[in-house]
Length: 317
Ligand code: AMP
Ligand code: MG
Image 1 (cartoon, rainbow, N blue to C red):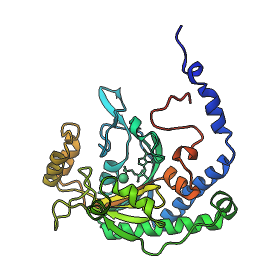
Image 2: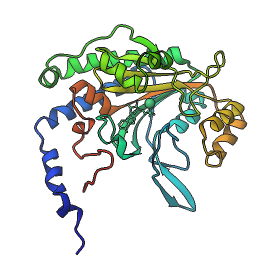
Image 3: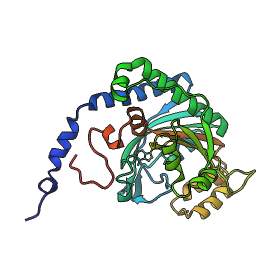
């Protein structure tokens, strides 16, 4: 007789225990306040909200392998959205939509090696934003302002919950320290990003990651990239990620070749680039559950969910 998932691991008990875990309400209230504060900040800054998409013929190729998640529909292959990077990039080509944001569900079927990182889920929510004709410096300023706005919003809205969960209110940060990957790799070797995060008490910038083709290469310093991440301290790791984007057709082709991206999948995106439809833009995004984890100082990001989304686990809901 075939054993069901239920009999094998008593997964129902585990799921129910998780739903009823003491403190889950307060964690969700922190997350709710992050979203409420984000909407207010974006509204004050005049960003227009787009609704998220869940399916697309193209999605973020990512910088690491995940299990492919796609379905057939109307004689086409549709991928579950890993991020809305390309939709953001195209949308801001309309000057009316020069500043946009999306609260976007991302499905990334992470492999088993990411099960115990404490910062990966296979499904999460990203607050994703993009600006027409803005540069790295502008978006970095915007991201620092966003974090300080959210932290002070949470301090005002839910002080008792913060004290209960983390023992104190959230700090306000001055300008964050700035590092480059090549610098940290010299000092720390492999896994420099997470080692530096473990060493730091405040979030910091990490610039110049060699990754997906759409992050713009610095024309004044080829081989380096105009991207910028904020790394949470105390070992919590990457929190926010952004970049100026490639928009020049030839440059996109070159970067696709370098990164081994399948050009056939991107043929329509490439023809859009060739016809000059892509405009200079820059943006960023942050994982809502990762910010919740950092604020609540949770050991594992999965503690910020009511229904587990731990990579590579057997789940029934
Ligand atoms: P990325 O486009 O890969 O930089 O992802 C954007 C943001 O989403 C990251 O900075 C993280 O905060 C968050 N994020 C990325 N992957 C995951 C994941 N597997 N689980 C939870 N959050 C994630
Ligand atoms: Mg990233």
